[in-house]
Image (cartoon, rainbow, N blue to C red; front, top):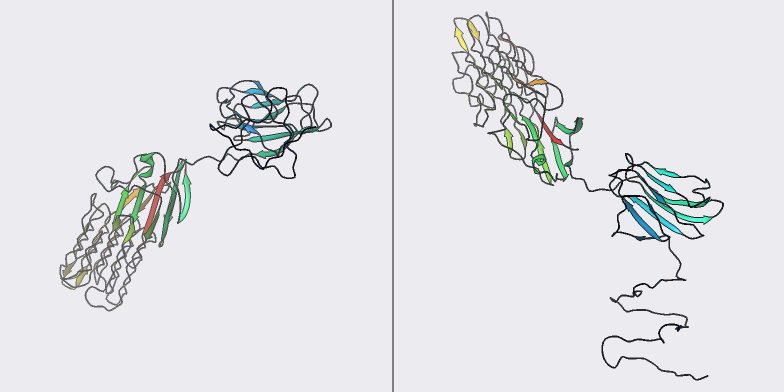
Length: 452
């Protein structure tokens, strides 16, 4: 026997080095360690060649170039994408021998409506039973290994969770509820609306919102009602709930969401004035914010000052004695208007009638010698899934003689009552010369979007 020993073989020309004797010849490489290829290189089988002796590690060769849409017979070592969107069909398993492996996955997530039936060969079994297996779970993927003739094909991997990209808006923050296909985030205090995934449909990223500021407080001593917090609402183009008449679509300010964090500020109600108190002793409410949207605080109910910088606001506070004019509403101005002015107060002899606080849809009424003014009405919106009125003005109080006015619908306080929480309602004016004022109702921020 002849033997040739060399340290290395290097090609002399060209880029291909061929070893072996061609068809009918066998090349044996005998060593403790055999290295094929190099870093960054590729080791490939020639077209039409097959491999033996390497064994399997529980994986298959996925047939990405051949999506199955009708009955077919699987081959050992292959994985298949089964598209049953056009109807149910059958995958026939091959005749199994120990170590054979076959996988299949629900290509269109339709196994739950159009099943895939998996059939063993002849009298062979699936999981020890000589019968078909029917996959009826959405997004299911299965891997079968043939063990022996007792158990036959055993399912060694079963995933029933379809991991798919989410085309919808995904967010956290506040108290989350649902209404049909929409999620609703309600903030009754400060927080963060955090968007982790924007929708692939542009219109669905224009969210619906309600931003409502805190209502104004009222002074002591029997005078004007607090104004409601500024009310700003926008109904997104993809949404379907019943919005208030102040819906800003079209003409208002839209908010288009992207994947980021949005700090939320929710304004508290204005403080109650003590008794007795001097001019302007009712506390103005506090503003609420979301993204580029700011709703102005409700104006404070006024006492006996003709110079009352705390009176204007989202809705204005009611006027006090000496014909004090009510505070202006929609200050600073927005489109649509976020509120209305408060009513004027009156001094008629010994009788003082405070003006009603302004509301989101109407001005507060003027006080009279026999009656405090009524608070302006709020508005009704179903943004949170059910109808509810918000942003009513507080009823005007009385110093002596006249009766008190009523609070406006939507959380406006009756005289000697606070504005209602989370409505932005203005505080009711106090009744009597020694009475203390009342606090305005806190605001709320509500964000609504399509999530499925």
